[in-house]
Length: 106
Image (cartoon, rainbow, N blue to C red; front, side, top):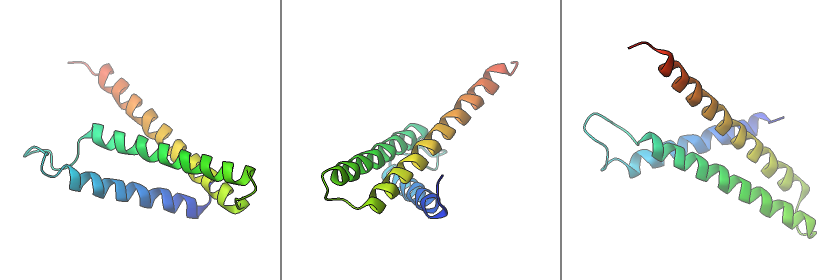
């Protein structure tokens, strides 16, 4: 189960990703868009989850070799769990929205 601290860190990293995506895409946005593209946000989110997983793997390997701290490993694994759960929830909502759109009559 995720602690409030891990959840707060996940939300903070999402906010940073949104700010970074907005700054990077500001010159490329069309007049009516006003922000980064959906594909850029998804790419950043997947990249962030991959980075979190790699951090978790690094901490686990350090612990296995006797150089790591148990709390660091537990924290990294919890952050990875929150990141993956968030990504899966977003994916499920996107799929549900697509299915709802496809059910609409023209």
